[in-house]
Image (cartoon, rainbow, N blue to C red; front, side, top):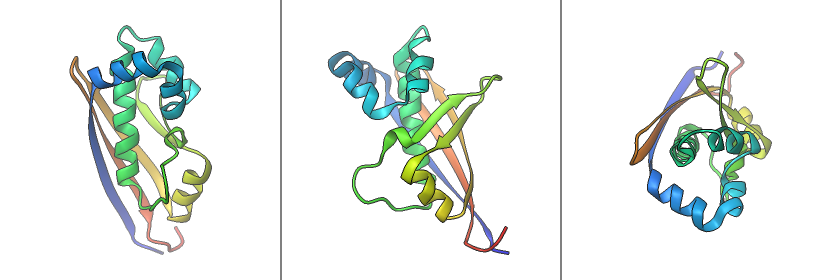
Length: 134
């Protein structure tokens, strides 16, 4: 059995920066960074830019925690941050990024988000096996 490894990632994002990007680039910006579920969730909130910023911070934090290297631009929509029925955020990986994470033995990715008027922050924890059978 392989050893269990973990790594963390963190990021902080300016809410005003995200609000400006949404205002200036609209759907083009949202479609590049967020999945339809994320857009639906955030746009239903009283202050959507806070929630978009928190999800962007979470995507960056997840990318830092994963034990994978990536050539070229990261497919940001392949990291989806959604809230469960109890409000707890969870991470879903998809596409080539999911395959790379599975290939690296990733078993779980957890995330915690927080935001205020000015900033959103996130911390991610990835757990994986170093290649041995689990």
